[in-house]
Each structure stands twice: as C-alpha cells, then as structure tokens.
Amino acid sequence: MTRPHHPYLDRPGAERPGPIAFAHRGGALDGLENTAAAFRRAAALGYRHFETDVHATKDGRLVAFHDSTLDRVTDARGRIGDLPWAEVRRAEVAGREPLPLFEELLEEFPEARWNVDIKAAPALVPLVELIRRTNSWDRVCAGSFSEARVARAARLAGPRLATSYGVRGVLGLRLRSYGIPAPVRAGAVCAQVPEAWSGIPVVDERFVRTAHARGLKVHVWTVNEANRMEALLDLGVDGIMTDQLETLRTVLTARGAWH
Picture 1 (cartoon, rainbow, N blue to C red):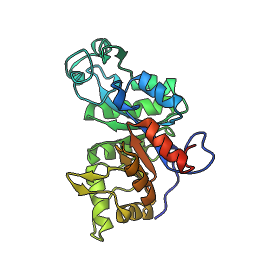
Picture 2 (cartoon, helix red, strand yellow; picture 1 turned 90 degrees about the vertical axis):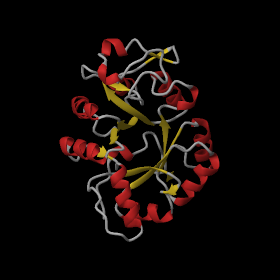
Picture 3 (cartoon, rainbow, N blue to C red; picture 1 turned 30 degrees about the horizontal axis):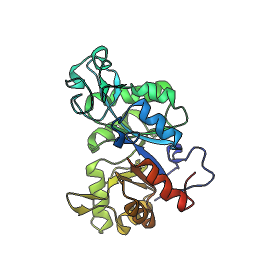
C-alpha cells in the first residue's frame, strides 16, 4: 500500500532523509517538561520535532501539559478541565516555569514539527480549530491512546491532518504482523508505539516490516538508553522519542543520521 508523503514527516534543515529525533515533552528529565524553557533547550540542541500533550481548560484554552491535574509537576493543585485559564496560567512547573498554551509554542517555534497527544476529549475540537486557524497542517501530528478520539480528529480535519494510531489501531497492526486479519484505520501516517507493553514486545522486525508495507512510519517512545536506541535503529524504525536529548543526538551523529 502506498500513501502520499505528509510534510510533517520531513526533517526541517536536514540534508537527507533519516530517522526523526523527537524531544519527548521537550526533554522531561530536567523537571521542566512541556515548558517553553524545555523546548528552547531542545531547539538549541538541534531538535526540530517536539512531542507534547494537550488539555483544554474549563474555558476552552489549549494547554501543553501531560497530566489531567496540576498536582505532580506544578506548585498548584486541581484538574485542568475544571479550571479557567486565568487560574491555570498562575501555576508554575517546578515552581519557576509557566505552563504554555499550545498556540504560544506554535508561534515561538515556527519551524518545529509537533507530535501532540490529545489527552482528553475536550481538547480535540480546540486542537483541530487551532491547527486550522494557524494553517499548521504540515507541522502537527495528532495522536492519542484512544483510537476513537484520534479517528474523530481525522474525520473533523480531513486528510490534511497527520495522525498516528491509538491503542486499538496499534493492536490491529500488530495482529496483522502475525498474519491475523484485523481492522486498521486508513489515513494514518505513522504508528507511534512503546518497545513493549505490559511485558509483551511491540516493536520487532515483523512489526516494522508490516507498518512499512502499509506506508506507515514507526516512531518509538520513550527510549533513553543508547543501546536500545541503536537496536531500534538497526530494526529500521523511523523515529525515536527521548528524554535524553544529548544521548539520542550522539547516537544519531555517530551513525551519520543527525541533521
């Protein structure tokens, strides 16, 4: 199966095609995940693909943040979906960095590609509307653990929106890799998966081959050890999401694959 190449999968500034390096939450290990400061650091290291998450506030503002509540990483408390942006904006990650709106990140990093996990249903329509309003079709890939959620985003936005598979889509692809007929959604551009789930391997040569036969790229999360990065790249995966930004850059540079 062939499908049109989506510009989201390009590597801005790269001289040749190659695996994509994703800064997971901007590089989560320094405690400033999903903040503008984290993404600035990633950009300074040469990253051009960023992974983030979005939640909608009570008044519909789209916040780049992983958890449903502010409790774990900020100096505030409460569920984002229950709070207005005027209150959420006062929270600070690690007590020093504000939470960004996703729109602000799109504006500050105009060359970046964004892999966006739609963490809850109320964020879906605001995300599609934001992408439409800012004409960011080439810069955003929408994903979610919920296949129904990301499929709805694809229906609302149409083929201009790059999407990945949710859990059900990945399961279908995995079953197909074993020759078992299973439904998979048409139109996705990539399968974004962990190496394993609940101890069961997901990414192997069979899975990568099946995805590539369908014209899908395989992006693996979240890989922080150099030896695992090397093994996955040897399998032919098309991208790696990491918190260890320097480690992935070093691995790709040694392979002549850093842009």
